[in-house]
Amino acid sequence: MAVTQSRRTFLQLAAAGTAAVALPVGVQQVVNPPGAAAAEVPGVDRVVASVCEMCTVRCPILVRVRDGKVVRIEGNPKEKSTQGAICARGNSGISLLEDRDRVRTPLIRVGERGEGRFREATWDEALAFAGGLLTISPTPAMTVIDIDGPGKTLIFAASSEHADMVVIKLKEAYKARLGEVDPDAIVKITGVASSCNREQEGSGWVVSPERVVTNAHVVAGTTSGHVRIQGVGRTYGARVVIFDPRRDLAVLAVPGLPARSSTQGPDLKRAGGAVVAGFPLNGPYRLDAARVRDVLTATGSDIYGSPGAVREVYSLFARVQPGNSGGPLLSPSGAVVGIVFARSIDDDKTGYALTLDEARPVLDAADSSSSPVSTGDCVAG
Ligand code: SF4
Image (cartoon, protein in one colour):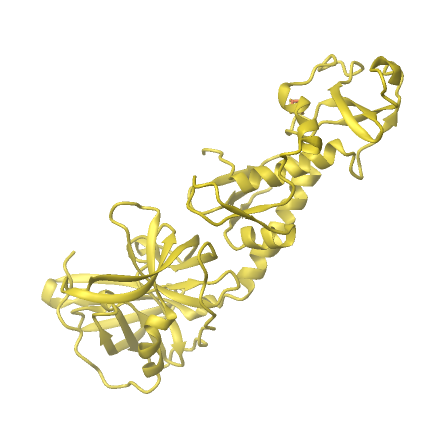
């Protein structure tokens, strides 16, 4: 598995490394240890034995301090394995402490990747932000984190107390997010489009008692439909009671569905974290990290290719796959903020979701709609 670090992750770890040079709690320090006289560097008033945490090797170091400032870092000659050597990265620990251009706070990107536009954030905000983007797979030996969107994976395999602290905080933020997602409100939808001799599947979410929202193209042309909570267990029969091919939305009445309605949240802003929930590739229930690239008024086609459909949508940095259609876009706190409906044909890391404002007329009519409606023709593909 490729190991990549986002700039933010690097900054967090770099900050952990800085803390190490600054002698955090738990690092034993010995002032002016034998063989490391302060006078060896002019003006140095003390030498502190510590451990470099610029990487997980943790080489023993001697830190020379003048007027309370670190002026030099070198290897501890008492250590047999390194024989007093450290690498250039270890030496650069001073820059993390003293360089006037050093990064002093977490930064959250506000522009496109590579554009170089960031805003300052507090650690609490940065960790909560990152926590909203995570999928975490803890194993006894390591913690694997997908951070900053799909495909960026960071593995914490060592037991650095600072790295562990970051992971614990990120996990807390992640759990807080999951705690507000009611997985029972997210359903898998299957149907048969007899005219096209085809089975269709997608995702949906419970908008009100016994009412499920999905995309119109998921149920287009179907004569029968079923839903399963979280994609497993009992199958519930469903009938389409709203079919809106322009918005690409449909509402299903599902008698006896025992799931609570989803919480709906406020609009997300540009660069805001989000989660795509659903059943990609007809597989099991999944949550995938996403981020809002932009909120757009997009002119396109309805589900049958007729032009002139104008919709308010989120453009997302997200991996949306067949089967995600109709599933909810969730805020970092787990509230529904949009409905996933498309992916870019040019870029597999870009997806699209309808905003709740766009969906509002359909959502508001869901409760009072109970009569079956035509589902039109099935869509191409
Ligand atoms: S000196 Fe180099 S190898 Fe040793 S811990 Fe520091 S960064 Fe790692």
